[in-house]
Image (tube, rainbow, N blue to C red; front, side, top):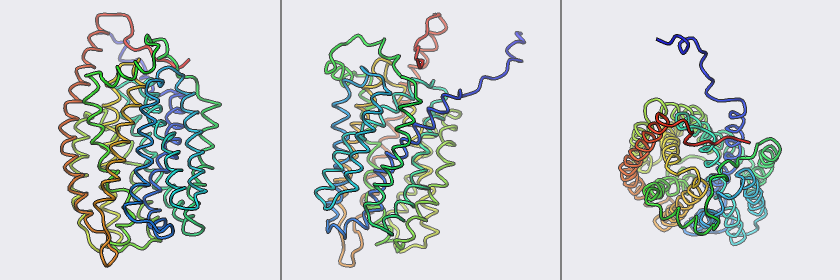
Length: 432
């Protein structure tokens, strides 16, 4: 037996620079996610002030998603033809400009236009970030990386939403958007100054026509199942979230000033659940953790969407469990889908994948706005109908992701076999 391997110190999971990349991408995602999420709790303030209906508010939410989907498709052909760092800086700058326009909106139609601009740029940021993660981190640790980056989801609730709601209550609903712009300047500057180029994929490009590259990526039969799975994955959040604050106040009897507590406490627990579910996905199997998270989420959705007036502590408990399931689904499904594309297609794949997610989310938000109505007592009606639709979509996704998992397992087995028989690296992605 070779004793050398037994005494050799274990290699750290992540280098110092890799920790920096994870942290800065998570902070960047925090601002992008907060920009989308803040619309939901602000709905209870924006709707009466701008005198808009639930259907109009649903359109405002879906406008961001649909424009993000359009920009993702337009960017797909070019996503693998540039240094990913430069792409990230370009789209993030546009995102901050769009958010500033939201902060200056004097009426509904200006806000609608500003949301479209924000979506055009913000919708591509997530796909570029995921392409960077996939380029730099091997599959064995990618669940943990995704889990840490998904902490941005928790941070937006713990820090962003309570502070944003406080500012909205104290000043005006415009204030949270100014907060995002100011906070977003920080990661933008750090990325420009400190992040190294991410351009190793450029050496693998053999197609000089961006539109041909996009068409081949879209029509690749190995990618279609992942795109379809992502389409349904978006349904849940985009259906329930836009009217979450309205439902909490009008139906559950939660006071508007208690919303920061509701979102903040749920977010604190999400800080733990994000990395934990990513770690468990790496250790126990990503699909197993996804299935467990889906079952937990479905149970909580069924309970939550059928509640009447409920004590704040009970609502918080249900939200904590629901977000635990959501984060388990997000971290593990993202890690699995990220393993599908070939290195030379990653940017295009991630852009298209983000686009179909945004299109599906925009459609879901629009449908939700058509399903939800206000009763004579101003309570939201048919929220439980949305819950049924969400649960049905989760059941279908569980089946679809099972086959995605099998596809990834086959690919990883092929990579392992190649490494055993060849000294050439299968993927040689480094930061230069």
